[in-house]
Image 1 (cartoon, rainbow, N blue to C red):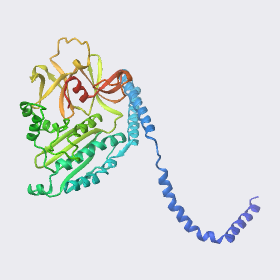
Image 2 (cartoon, rainbow, N blue to C red):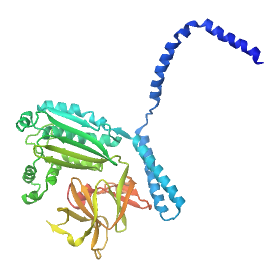
Image 3 (tube, rainbow, N blue to C red):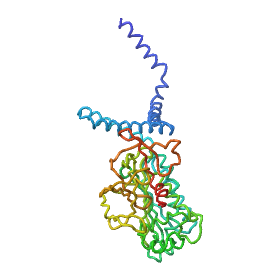
Image 4 (cartoon, rainbow, N blue to C red):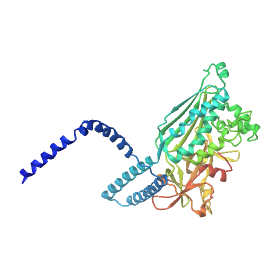
Amino acid sequence: MPKPASPPASDKAAETKASAPKPVEKAPAAEKVEAKAAPAKQAADTSVRVDTSRLDEIMNMVGELVLVRNRISTLESAFENEEMAKAVNNLRVVTGDLQTAVMKTRMQPIKKVFGRFPRVVRDIARSLKKDIDLELRGEETDLDKNLVEALADPLVHLVRNAVDHGIEMPDVREAAGKPRQGKVVLSAAQEGDHILLTIADDGAGMNPETLRRKAVEKGMMDEDTAGRLTESECFSLIFSPGFSMKQEISDISGRGVGMDVVKTSISKLNGVIDIQSEVGVGTTLSIKVPLTLAIMPTLMVMLGEQIFAFPLVNVNEIFHLDLSKTNVVDGQQTIMVRNKALPLFYLSKWLTKGRTDGKKPEIEHVVIVNVGTQRVGFVVDVLLGQEEVVIKPLGALLQGTHGFAGATITGDGRIALILDFPELMKVHANRGY
């Protein structure tokens, strides 16, 4: 059977070669075209366009998985079973990897925001007749898409401010022994689960004495209070509403408003802003924001029978306090931490109702928190430890409740409220940081 079948096959091959000599000549060129097209086709197939609402939905489901993982981890500790412990540890690792992978799908390089600054600086420098060099660092740093969009406006304002307020005129710089060209450095870097953004200039810097004098002139405080302010407290005055160091109003500097809006925007992102400045050397603003807004590392504490969550980005340090070592300054209870007086507040008086003050313990747990640009001490009843939580918005009945950023479910299945410190201070202590 195979022998009769073979001749027709060879005949067909011969016929094909004889009847189609021209296409064979063109074949090498066609192969080249196909070879060139293949990699392009492969490259096009490696990415998929996905709607951000779908990514948000997946992130929300991963958040729920994190809550279930925390719950199972808590239950597992009650059983002394080695196999169960191994399974729970595997679940913890897989959930962590999945969480990281989903977070990365929402990530965008901060270059998307940084890309607009060269033109912004060039235009402002031209209108002010200044010579300024802008240096961008860490443009490839990735962070949450929502954060990229939320940071755009605050960063634009801070860069405009550095060019307008910070950098001196070329003649003034030359007289001070500096190069005529000023320098602004905008950088981004990842630090653990946070992003650090810095805006640094080599301009005139800020004089604490001038800031103190301005605060007294505006009636923000009396001379004694202004005289007791530290350098960093003086620098943070620029975030007060309507506070401006410019004598004349300009369209560039924000007409004396804007820095307070910047601080509010950063606080809403659970971020912290800090200023370092030296007269004649320059100013550096540092902004620290979390990588993502969906899942937040927190410090769990108890006040009475209720659990509350402190965003970990705000927590500076924790220590045990001997209550006999507190002082009262201007009617405010304070504690000394490294030779600096910090205001001390009892959170239970603000957040737990109908609690009778029994005999106070001699030693209390104190959590030092960064509120805006200041540090404040809060006394809590019990420290439960660190936990990653998923932020859930408050329900319709609690909408508009001041001092809370949201709620979450703890590892043991209870509800914990996440505190919003700037708002809490404004409502209960009548202070805006």
